[in-house]
Structure formats: structure tokens, C-alpha cells
Image (cartoon, helix red, strand yellow):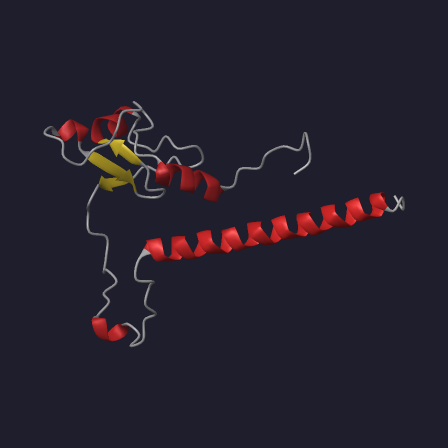
Length: 141
């Protein structure tokens, strides 16, 4: 992107930002599922899935406050919307690659590789320095 070029925000950017937000866009308070009053019960915009408190949704005129949405239908959070994907063990491949025994083993291997590379670099520096000293000793440099 060039300096001064306007930033383009796509609808996918807006959708992702809404998906990551757990605060009500009207009151900016956290939307929680375990509330004791119906007024604070979470509802979702039927179009963009933005979370709201029921009261905030209603105070906004019963429509979504998300830029570019404005949808007028909502449903309670946790409502079953259709069939779920079901996976059985028989659906999984028979051969599953095994992870290393422990993450520390991989870490140790990487540290050893790093040490070898550092030693190689030090060795090259030694030979370069020696070569340079020999050239100076004979007045060739």
C-alpha cells in the first residue's frame, strides 16, 4: 500500500471485527450468557451475528447498529439454528501422524541446531581473521 492511499475496509473486515467483539455495540458492556435478568440476555443479529443485550437491541429500534447491516431480526444467543456437523471415529483417517514425545524434545533439537550454526559462524570468522592477518604480515594488504 502506498503512502496516502486510502484504506479500504471490506465487508469481511467488518464481519471479522464484529465476530471478535464480545461487547455490546450500544452500551459497550460485556455481553454474558449467564445473566439473571431477561433485559441483559444476549441476542444476535440474524444477519451479521453481532451480540447485543436484549434491552440495547430494543432501545436501538429493534435493528442492528453495525455499520452496513441495519438488519431488523434477532434471535436469542444459543438458539439451535439447524443441523450440526457430526463426526464419527470411523470418519477419521486410520493413520494419524504422532506428535513428538514432548515439546521440550523439539525445543532441545532447535537449540542444538542453533548452537551448531553459531559455532560454524565463529569458525568462519576465525579463518577470515587468520587470512587477513597473514596478508598483512606479508604486506599484501
